[in-house]
Each structure stands twice: as C-alpha cells, then as structure tokens.
Image 1: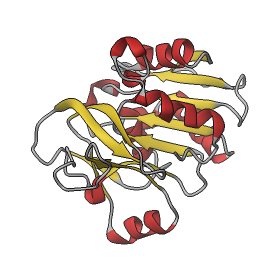
Image 2: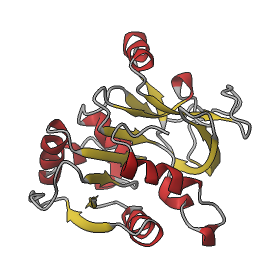
Image 3: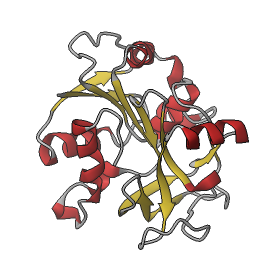
Image 4: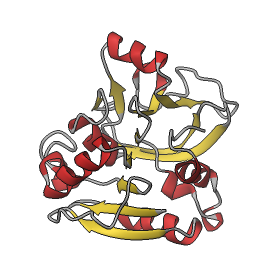
Length: 224
C-alpha cells in the first residue's frame, strides 16, 4: 500500500505524517505538491493524506482555498472512485470544504487555540491518547446530518475521558456530540481533528496514534 501526502503552502504536519508512515509503519510514501495533478502512481487500494497545518495561510475559512488547488481536484476524483483519503486537522477542514465529508469545523467554543493531549474513543470503545492542535476544530452539522451519521456508523471517533466515557468535560473544543472524526457513507474518506502522526513513535512516549494509522492498512472502512 502506498501513501501520498499532499503538501500545501502552509502545511506544517506533512513531514510528521511522512515520518510516521515511513519510519513507524514502514510504508511507502510519495509527497504530492498542491500545484500538480498527477496521481497515476496510486490505485484505489492506496491512500492519499491531507495533513495538518494552515493551508494558504487560512486567510479565508480554513481549507476554503486549498479546496480549489489542482491536486485537490485529483483527490476528489480519486475519492469518488473509491480511493482512500485521510484528512487530519486542516486536512479534515479541507475535506469538509470539498464536500467529501459533511459538516463544517468552527472556531473552538473558548475562542482560543488549543494544543494538548486528549482522549478519543472509537467503535471498539478503547480510549486512545492523541494530541490536538487547532483553533477551528469544533465540528458542527445540522440535526438531520448528525442523525444520518449516527445511523450509518460514520462517527468514527468521539472525545472522551481516560476511561472512555464520553462527557462534556472531555470535549476540548465544543464539538457537537463530542465528534472528533467522521467518515463518508462509503467508508473510504475519513477526517479527524486530533493528530495520530504525533503519537506514533515510542521516542515520543506514546504510540496510540499508530493504532489509528494501522487501521488504514487493514480496514477499508477505517474503523477501530
């Protein structure tokens, strides 16, 4: 399986993701420049990654300009053909702006940038400690969309406490229904605000992020 990491002007987690995939998971990685379009080296069994950062300086809504980059047109087509796409933090924002995922990411409820470790829980109910670093990470969608996400099992991660309890106190940014990550209905496009690539190395004292990244290699539905 190959991974392609899209690099936008303002990306600052692209090399973190490259290091995690190459050195911690021993995967082949190809860096993709935002002005290019060619992704012919990837099949739908591979995965394209939109990393965290501040694409195009976040001068409009986060991800709003990146959505129109030449490479994103290829990413959108790749996703529509069933190829796997992962967006982390700013990448999640870009996926929502591109309408590959429903909903939007709003300013954090406390109106401040937040950078700390939080806990997530997925389908398996295990609490994973993963860092966040964002100012606009508060997931929001209308009630009809939220109910559809629930029914279709598209809410992949929620903020929780260290024991896996989903509580308001464990929600760092005010995200509706504690949502930290979602997938599309087909299960091949996935976005999350926390940074698994920052928690995949034993040197950093935390490898919980490796469990999330490993999921991409073994489960097309990106569940855990």
